[in-house]
Image (cartoon, rainbow, N blue to C red; front, side):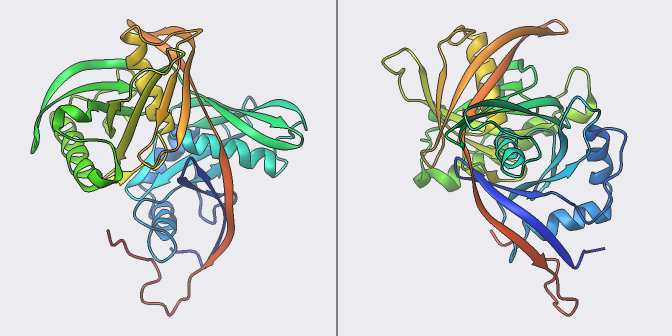
Length: 340
């Protein structure tokens, strides 16, 4: 059933939208945030609300957002179900950064005028932190500290319309395929936007079709969420690794930011290559629109037999609006539509 009214607060993180629904007008039951996501995928009410907010005329094909839900226990401040045009995702770094800003802006988590406060959030892939930095009563930066991230498989040969891609599968809260765009004759810039989307979709669907993207412990986290197409920009003077990427996720959506969980995935690969590590160097990560995140490895661990890193991604989110969307019962386009 489509609700007649829904209130949202919208942010953008490095250009990527994040629409927050603090009081979802549909039931989102479950024993944990991960369980709520599984149930939401099968819920006509949850899917209807997601589609309403993603679709035109209230949204667009590249819309992103989250439904606030209870945390798994009192160790976190809130839980969230991330959503996009194609469904409900397991992780979202840019959304976590926006939620940190929102939690302090609304007073849900009191923030100091000067100093730092942690906003702890349960997401489908686990417990993450938005570390909110404040100065003179304003939020000035937010660190997204993610779940352990690690390489699953390297140099998988994937046939595409532009030749064979060498894809590395990596987990950063969601599973990504990471490919050097230049090996396919592409540059990560707006002029190549359509070609990047096309080849990103090809790589994702090919790897999903052959069952390569399997999470080693939790099947709910299996499957390729997105393709990261990246290019080297040359290390900065301080030896910081400098790269640009575009993440094509879900079914052809494009992340305008450098992608939070995608940056964690790139950090896991770069750490495996010995190019970043605890204490530095860091990753200066650009997006297709020129916005930036700073990625750092703040710890190491192991996930089973695999070495893993604890990644941190630093960025900033800004509020863009508050909305009360309504649905006229007589509107033949009430649920909305998608026109790419």
